[in-house]
Amino acid sequence: MKIAIISVTDKGKSLSQKLKNILDKDSTVILTDIYYKNVKKSMPILFDKYDAIIAIMASGILIRSIAPLINSKITDPAILNMDENGKYVISVLSGHMGGANKLTVKIANLINSEAIITTATDVNHKLGIDTIANDLFLDIKNPQSIVNFNKAILKDKKIIIQTNDKFIEDYISKNTLEINLLIENNNNNLKQDEIIVVCNDTILKLHKRKIVVGIGCRRNKSSKDILTAIEQSLRDLNLPLSRIDLLTSAEIKKDEKGLLELSEKLNIPIHFVELDKLKLFKSDIVQESEFVKSKFGIIGVCEPSALISAGFDSQLIYKKTVYDGVTISIAVSKKEIN
Image 1 (cartoon, rainbow, N blue to C red):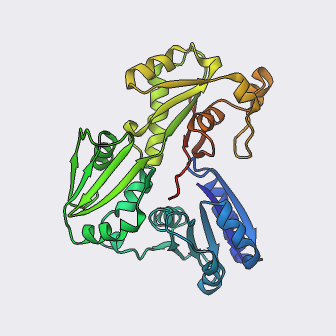
Image 2: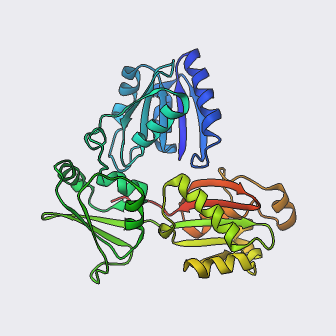
């Protein structure tokens, strides 16, 4: 998640810096930028550039500045509102699909403030269908049906999920959903990467985005050590291992025994990116490695490999993190907008 923090007072500016210092240590936060004043001029830029905006200011200033920019719950960034003392954190926009509710709770826990969330499913301790889709990086092909499904969830109606993938079941087993849910597997009528959600006569169509784990490691690292690193990163994202579509690294690692064994053990394919592609790769969010750059002429291994393998316009969801000689980064393919 790329986060912008904007404030209008000196106390708000100090709180912005405090938040940035904390969030920069979070592997799921790819970057955090601070903006000060000029709200009306800055907001259109922030809407396009960031996944989330934390506005430390009076709610009236925030609402007037974002009103002309609001378009869709599918594409709008998460908007949070805070007072300059950090007493309250309010989820204002894109609570489910944008992840504003989840980020609100995270911020509140980090600075010991009170989270204010008003979406009906959340205040009734249930997960909305759009929250599940957001957590698992699933595109909703007919978002106009989201409201009907969340109403059904609130009324405790049975929701049927048709899928040929194991990750939905794994996700549900690790999360308390408090919803009436039934999983139907092995549906031969489903298209590849398609998931169908049914309630009465209403159908919601979901499509998997490709999730790729980029891996760098010291020579002769065991498959066990690499797996331990991957599992920790997935815990941070609340993703089951079964949701991973591809492992990847640089071609300089193509004979690395631990990587090959792990791919076989997990039954997840591994792709080794050619050095020529890595040398041409440029990004302003990748953490450069001076050692790798001096030795191989590339800016890094795990982040560039993940982004290249996830495809054009993919995004990082887990920045390079080091685990005892193993570096992990995770990317997801481009969101499809209907």
